[in-house]
Amino acid sequence: MKEPSPQRNVFLHGIELLLASILVVGAAAYLLIYLYVAGMRLRYPYELEWIEGGLVDQVGRILAGRSVYGPPNISFTPFLYTPLYFYLAAIPAKIFGTGFFPLRLVSFLASLAAIGGIFWIVYRNGRDFLASILAAGLFTASYRITGAWLDVARVDSLSIALLVFFWLSIPRNPSRGRWVLTGFFAALMFLSKQTMLIALLPFALVHLVQYRRRAVWLAAGFVIPVAAVTLLFNLATNGWYSFYTINLLAQQTDWLSQDVIIGFWTNDLFRHYAVTIFISLAGIFLIARRDRAEFWKWFSLLTGAVLCSFLARIKEGGWDNVLLPAVAMLAVLLGIGWNRLMPSLTRIPSLARSAVVIGLMVAAGYQFYHLRFNPLDQIPTPENYSAGQRFLEYISSIPGEVYIPYHTFYAAMAGKQTYAHQSALWDVLRGQTANNGKEILIQSISEAVNNHQFNAIILDGAGEWNFLYGLDSNYSPQPEILPAASSPVPLTGWQVSPQTVFLPIAAGRGNTPSTSSLFAFTEQRALISCNSFLQYSSIFDWMLRIKFFVMPACPYQASGA
Image: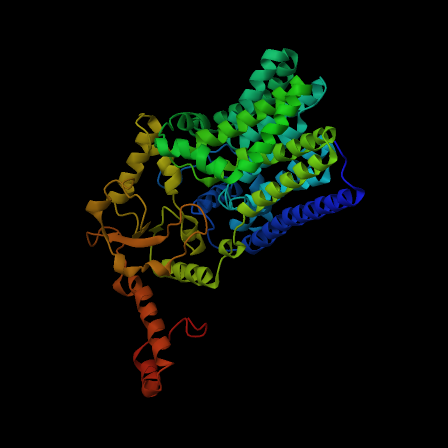
């Protein structure tokens, strides 16, 4: 075959360099965009996601020296997560105070650790900067696909960071200490989120069959810390720790429809990551031809990560965030596949090689383009801030206890006592299996509602209310009190907001809120509308003077609301 001219080689090489530079800039741009978005969201004083406030409550109990895992009741019911994230978040919370920021800070730092870990896994594998930055960039570019979750006050970012460190710690030699360390990272991963254990199982099974001695040390590093934590917490909580973190999780067998099961493969993965999957599988195929042990390592890790995401996705309540383990592994394998593909192309003629390389780079560029999102959509607006402030002022205006089950920490921000979060209650009440915890919780909820413990219960418009036993016969909905636009809406996850206020039906039972306090919020909104109309109507200038004698001053006039 006739070789191409030197000028053509230089031209094609120049195109390769240009495309490689574009890929590096594009991948780096996604990282900078994430840093900007997270920086704008960390200090946001209201919920980015609807369960954040419940986790803040749980960290607050740790700071107060109170037990986290105890009998479920309306005052407090813990989430079913293992405790690592909460106790870790309590450290910055001790410094900065209880709120969203300390928990988001832990998640943000963990996400940076995960991104850095993905970069280093790929770089260590092939010493190729382009492949490494592509892997880290792909994970960051998936920010919106995975729910805009990396910086929210949830356990996921920490568990993903520990998953990546688990992958990173897997040794290439039979060193006992290194295998114990790998097992220890797996234990930390489990202690941050139990379902991450699924990502470990295929890898552990392969090593149990092929390398039994390694499997023993891996198991020792995992079992000892997990067993120690479980034993200590069970002793301290009379067994309630296992009730939440093991028993309840095992009872979650509510699977979604066949459409969701198929959609995980067709929509969540192949629709968004077809190019990455192709390069990843090509890389695994090339690994299998040269190193069987390395092949089984990456194949088992890929199987575990995808299975972890799949089982969480098809379970009732699975959101976009459950895709993170699969996406993290796909990002790693994109880089490793790139590392393996490029050297393998040296055997073909230079012109054909350049064509294949350019084609792969164009495909990788399309992969990043496909994952594009508008970062401004993820950043709180002035309207979000003002809605949150108005809602807190409304809560403060109600005398006595106020229960906001879907957004519990807002009560604390308004100077009131917090109560159990709806998501934690749902985890106890869901399923058909009878247990002591469910009976205790139902009794606690029923007593609180029947005795009119709350002067007001504020529920979300799209929420489920059947967990409040006796609500219909003891409380009456007053939807006109709280207009939908007057409460903050989370930016990601289930985007619901407080809309319906329930007031006690029977007067004299409990402290029934006064008319003036309950309708203060509605009056304020009327005054806001009044001011907005009057200040633009010169015909009614005289009314601007009169209204101050017959109406209280509008509290939002200074801010132009």
